[in-house]
Image (tube, rainbow, N blue to C red; front, side, top):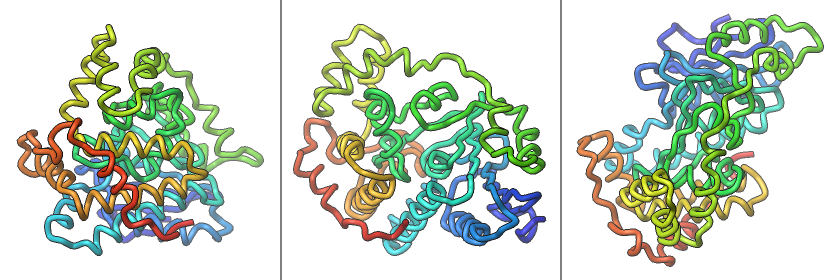
Length: 355
């Protein structure tokens, strides 16, 4: 049964044989999330939570480019530039509530992170009970590249990656393939893209007592070795340094070409975003729950979006003027003071709005 009016809706909502099926449906934008989509997803989960005919949820994305490229940052740019602060608050508050809802949903949520899955897409797929990737998957939290910080519970996932991979992935915005995502803890199973239709059909036609996890294991394949795992020696050494300047120094001293390339990338990234993000991942390691990490992130994103110029400048350079020449404030890593980083974490403590 199709519960949405027409096939042009930004989220397709269907139910069939005990499975609630949610499909992000903005393929031209790689299913980038806006507030309307967040509300549609939340409404469907509300409706199905106590529906005895629905015992599992399948979450995927339309098109062949990816599951979800993240939040609609161009729309966010317009909100910030036009001073629509209430809309900025509403977007992040409701997005985080949805991410936490997926993480704590009483029925299994099976998320398929096929293709590009970044930022807000990780918020949806990364907290599901059963997280699938394919050979086409490309996962990342690239927020520092636009003068921002990983959110949507990303700091929670990053802080629990092996060794210092969390710092590396957070600061660089590095892309993970399927093997990397499994190794770093962002996914649970690799299912070849060609098998996804059969998996969907199996979920709808399963026979008791088969669980969604048991069915997924029928299609699961062993990935190739993770390149991140192989790079752990230089990543763990460099990203264990106390601060960003120390990380840069260690990267420059390493013999691996990849380490020096990473230093170049960090030098070009927003210094304030990199410093705050490093602290966010390390603080998240000591937090007790995803909910606590979301609360920390909520204060940080509001600080960046409403008091600092870098987010606006980063989006301008990447997506509006597309000159790829952002002017960061401060301009250099050595000019980021510890007091400024502390200010970010003291800003607008988030009330208990989810969970």
